[in-house]
Image (cartoon, rainbow, N blue to C red; front, top):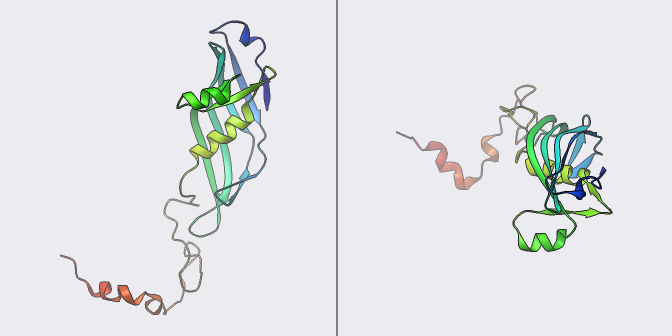
Length: 171
């Protein structure tokens, strides 16, 4: 989603309020398919910061992915504050600062690219369908959230190196 910053580039300190509903395409992240359940909402300001630009505001979106434990669908709600930086000299800025700058191209910034990057940064490390997800039975593959499995073979699947730990008594 490209936004024109032509009017903002005239004077340092100028800013403009922005409210955007951005339809994000389904994507892949860490080999997992992410399905956006609606548009990504951005509400904030774009500011001329001495020839560079900053888009600061709140990002809200809902995503569906696969639970890492049981493989059921998992819904993720993200709601975070962010600041995305843009520069006409993005490559040069990236070499000299710790902040990552995205390029300004023909007096336009690509807010969609910045939002996508920020969503990836704010994704949870582990995607779960619910906090107390029980996962799958390691023997038969039964989803333990949907019911108990009838496996008697759990002891037979234990690594023999750990068999003695089973008899360990803790004080």
